[in-house]
Amino acid sequence: MANRESDDSLRRILRETRIIAMVGASPKPDRPSHGVLRYLLARGYRVFPINPGHAGELILGTVFLPDLASVPEPIDMIDVFRASSALGGLVEEALALAPPPKVIWTQLGIRDDDAAARAEAAGIEIVMDRCPKIEIPRLGL
Image 1 (cartoon, one colour):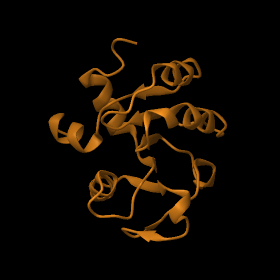
Image 2 (cartoon, one colour):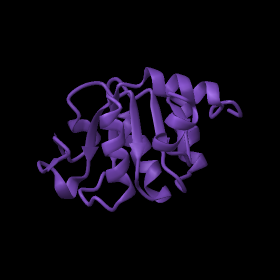
Image 3 (cartoon, rainbow, N blue to C red):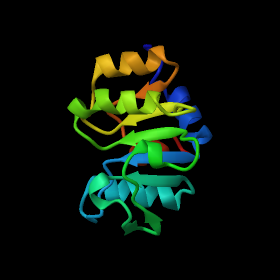
Image 4 (cartoon, helix red, strand yellow):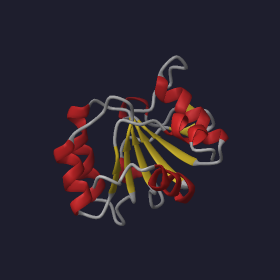
């Protein structure tokens, strides 16, 4: 567990990830999730924005989905822009997917060690309190 967020692990995750479900994506350009969504799309990732309040609306050329179960293909990584208190429920939602995602990545300030332990016990890698928009250039990817 101590090595789960090593630079080598982060590099591998970001290189292997192609399909991302972004939970808590916002249509507001001034929100961090909007900027990260734009960045990841520009980097060639396929990102499905998840926000039930905006389901069906268009954002940056892609359509908001209401939940993880609505993503039409297997998810490599869930990128979480929700409060730490929501992480437990998101882990349960992720575990219900077939197949489950390979990685759950929580943004800056988002951490729930109990939820992370449940995900890891089910074979899902966890990265907490980090941002791929920061890590990709930092790691030279």
